[in-house]
Image (cartoon, rainbow, N blue to C red):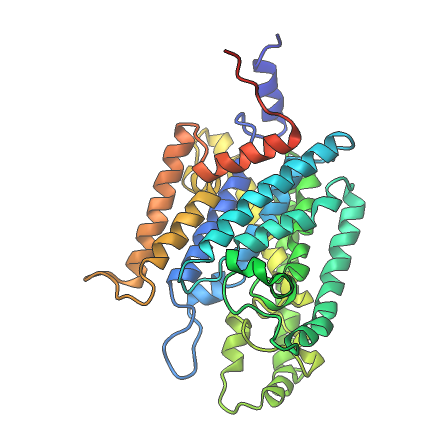
Length: 412
C-alpha cells in the first residue's frame, strides 16, 4: 500500500490542489452559474423605447453560457487523461460513462422543459453536446486545435445556409419553447431545434466544447500557463469584438441589416450588443460579420471563447495565489461550481414558481437575484466543506461509473 503523502506533493508541484480538482476550474464554473442566473433574473435592457442595454446584458449575455460550455469541454478533458488523452480500451469505457452521464443531464433538462418559465434552459443542449464531442476525446492537442479552429470558421456558414431551409418547412422545424418529454414525439423538429433553430444551436456550440478540450489538454499545472490563457483569451476576445463592431458600424453592416429587416425604428444597435436570438438571420451575408451575443457567428464564437479562456486563466491564477497565501480565496465560487447541475435545476424550479406572478411584497428583481446567488454560494460552501456531491452530481457520477464499468459490488 503506497503512502498518500508523495501523491499530495506531486499534485502540489503540478499546481493541482490536493483534492484532485483544479479549484480554479470549479471557481470559473461557479462564476458561469452566477452569470447565467443574472441574465435570467435581472433585466438585460432598460425599459425605454430604445431598449438601452444594461450592464448585466453587456457583461454576461452570451458570455456566461459560453463559459459554461467551454468548461464542459475542460472537464471532459480532465476526466479523460488531461494532457495525455486515454486510448482504447479505456477510451471506450470513458465514452460510455460520459454518454450515460449525458442521458442523466438530458432527463433533468427534459423534465425542467415541462415547467412554465421564461428562461432558455440549456441542459438538453448541454447533454447533446456531450454526445457530439465523444469522437474527439481521444485526439491529441494538435488535432483538437485544428478541429476547433475549423469548426469555429465553418459551422456558422453551414448553419446560415441550412437554417432557412429548416424554418421554411411546414410547420417550421423550430420548437419555440424549451425541449420537454413531449417533444420526443416529434424527433425531426426537436433535432432541428437543438442543432440549428433553437436558442443554443448545438451545431455551432460544439465549438465551445472543442475549445474546452484544447484548454483541458494543456498542462494546466505549468507555472506560466494560466497567465498565457488570460492574455491570449483577452486578445482574441478584444480583436473579435472590435472586428465585429467595426463591420457593423463603420463598414455598413448594420445599415444593410436594417434594410433586410425592413422595420423602421427597430433598435438593432442595442440588440447587436446584447442578444440576437429571435431575429431571423437570413437574407444577407452581413449577419455573419457581427459579433453579437447569441448570434452563433465566427466572431461571436471567437469572442465568447476568448472571454471564457481568459476567465479560466484568471481563476487558475487566483488558485495559485490562494495556495501561496494558504487561504482558500476561491471557496465561495468553487463550492457553487462543484454542484452546478443541482443548483441550476433548483434555480430554474424556483423561477418557474414566480412565472406570470407578482413578486412577494417588498421584493425586487435585484433582491431575488442576490438571495438566489447567496443561497447557491452558501449551499456550495457547505457541500464542499462536508466533502459531499450535489444530489444530481451524485446521480451523474453514478451513471458515469456504471458506463465505465466501475460498479462496486456490496458484499454481505
